[in-house]
Image (tube, rainbow, N blue to C red; front, side):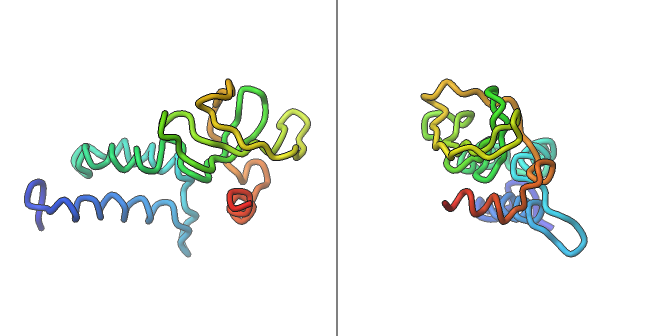
Length: 142
């Protein structure tokens, strides 16, 4: 029954993490949302639901493009986010692995977007490309 300033900072932080975990996790009754989609939804809910300062810090920690996000690059290649950049929330380190124009795998190339000249065109859904969650997890780990 507590609200606003009655809640401890730890409770406010926990609420943000709990919601993110809940909406990104697969449940028996629904599939989890992709991380970037989840952040977008949470941002639309934050007025009155989350402490604005803490939500911004949370996004800064996991990035605008969280690890595991599938990206379409201007070069018509697909890449997966593998690490956040300390220089820019909008330019993570990625693994380029697929040509969308030839619809085939290409040699994996790790690229730091802060110095590569590559540009993110948008976020893709792995299932739309036939990539399973396990494939994405394995790609990040390799």
